[in-house]
Image (tube, rainbow, N blue to C red; front, side, top):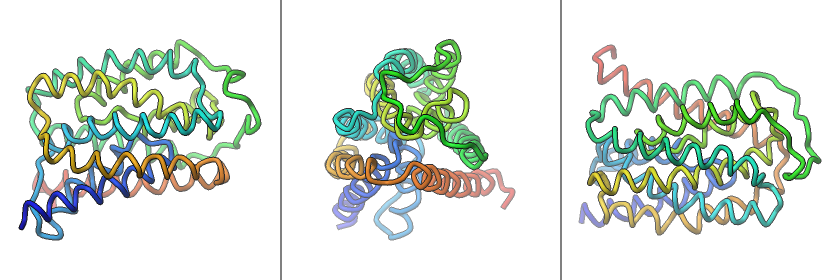
Amino acid sequence: MTETGLLITLFLIGLVGAFFSGLLGLGGAIILVPLLLYLPPLIGVGALTMKEVSGITIIVVFASALTGVLTHNKNRLVSRSLVLVMGVTAAFTALLGSIYSKQTSSETLLIIFAFMAAFAAIIMWLPKKEVGEGVAPEDVTYNKIGAFLISVVIGFIGGMVGAPGAYIFTPLMIYFLGIPTKIAIGSTLGIAFAASIFGAIGKLTTGQVPYLLTLAVVIGAVPGARIGAKFTKKVPAASLKKALGVVIAFAAIRMWLDVLHKLNYL
């Protein structure tokens, strides 16, 4: 019964997490990782380690990001140039990170993820006037060297923790590359999809993916991401930015509480 309860819980986590990731332009890790870590034990259906969670997440992000980016592309919110430059770079470095993570402890992966979430949360709450609201994806201009360097670092770290880094790519694209919010959201899913391909290969070939548990989350994530992505075009950019900031900040706080507890500071 507990195993059945766990699978049902994982399905619902995939459905809800992917909906908000599709809506806010997240690959899903920033929402899925805290839910997968804390919700099952909270309701008494089991518990997953950070290593298991990272293996599940990279596969789910692959599925939900693909679904979300196809919808965003139909709405003309995806810059193919951004996806090509940042996605390809992040894909190769994510592969290296995912393979390297085989010899990394669950506690270390948790700390890395918490640092990433905190950094993204801080960036998202910095004031910045929205620019380029009406710019077409093909007309977006940006610093390609800066985009490449961001992708190298975030791709590698994201591959380690099973999170292609969509929740960091989006704020970095908005604040450092000057990409309009909605195009940053749509393009980020394309980048996350590319990175998750190689990240998933690395996790799968090193035996870090629990197949049955992952399948339960994926079944919920695919329709959830599609529904969430459809709502993005209807929501004002400022509201999306605020919602994204709240989600990332909440996840960062919860992760750091867990880190401090594991280090016996709480």
